[in-house]
Image (cartoon, rainbow, N blue to C red; front, side, top):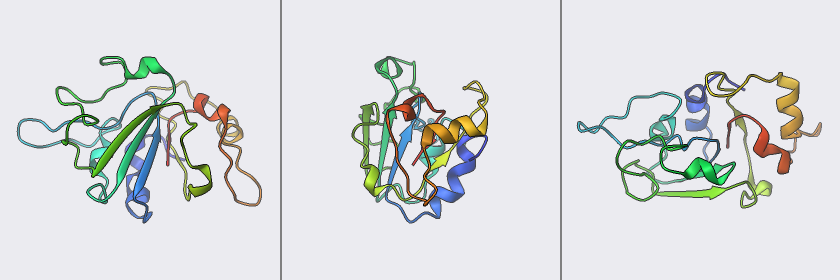
Length: 151
């Protein structure tokens, strides 16, 4: 559990995963500027995942309004879910968490993001994630009301 999304980047890069599921009000993928750069911040960390050329970035927006023009998008002109500008082999976007293959989730990173989310006690976040005592993970409908979660 970290304070801001980009703080998860080292863990994601070391994970050995190929797919990243981002449950968030914001897409966290941006298009590069005219010089081809994307500065690292909480809304662009997805552009800095090392294995992106081989993997899939999936944005699970908690509600449809997040995908309205500029509401949850982090790009300026070229939508990385429509154009090949983020460096990911594949990008996808869904509403909600029903399509997440929970049985295949190997790691969970939680970014509290106090700049964008009213801070909740850690216990409340963990209850929403419903981590089991045996170490297995069980997602569920309460997860969409949790703070930004990155898989």
